[in-house]
Image (cartoon, rainbow, N blue to C red; front, side, top):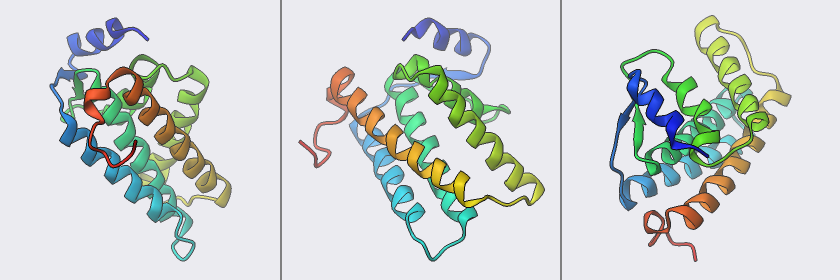
Length: 155
């Protein structure tokens, strides 16, 4: 993991410096957990379940980038892509796994902007990937930024 890449994104305006704290990280993790719980509800559409899981991915990636001292500039286009593609630099996620999240991001864009639909396989893949990312982000926080995950209700 190199913060140099994050600093480069800051230089071109994709990221801004940001000081986070326990409460902000706690809220993002709790929101991701709620979204994952919603994604597990079988009575709602695959699109809604996919959206909930994707929202969890974004909240987790945002927590990771904030824990590294940055936040995306949401006034600039491409901030979802920036946050997802920063995962190798924030928590050391493999580029292969990051590519999966990028594919999911593009599927989300297609459904949101063209009215497309999400198949069951894509929905299940998004839920599974979000759950894995939850474990990865929580583990990284405990190991690298333990001061941000104290008092989170988990040992």
